[in-house]
Length: 148
Image (cartoon, rainbow, N blue to C red; front, side, top):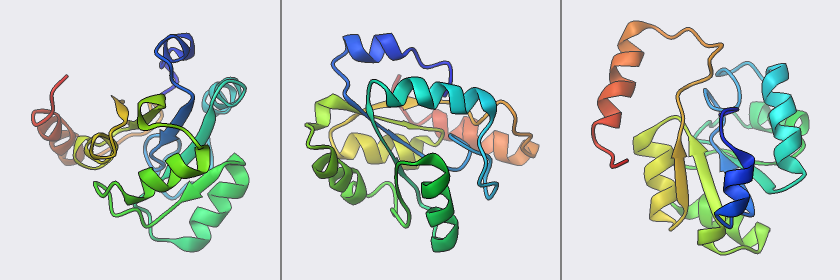
């Protein structure tokens, strides 16, 4: 995620960014972000409206993350449903073509963002995460079903 060029987003007319939570902004169930992610988010916050849309159903965790990140964090999204993406659009008061969805899962984050008419950026899970090989296999398999 931190490799995303913020200047390029501005040139593309982006005014808002919706992130996935687990494996995109922070390691699952950690409630913490890396220093690199914190720095990147502060740079992004100065130029864009920011929010998180997550499938995570742990309400106390979602609340903790919202306080930690100091941005809108919506859980129980049931992605690839577009419902909460569209709700964030209303909160941002932006059009779908002015918002990009950033996530690590093609069949939830990317598909959900596209169903809401938004641009999408597929990222690899956090560099700091070590995932079992079977999870990596399924991540690669999912990517076979999307267009670049």
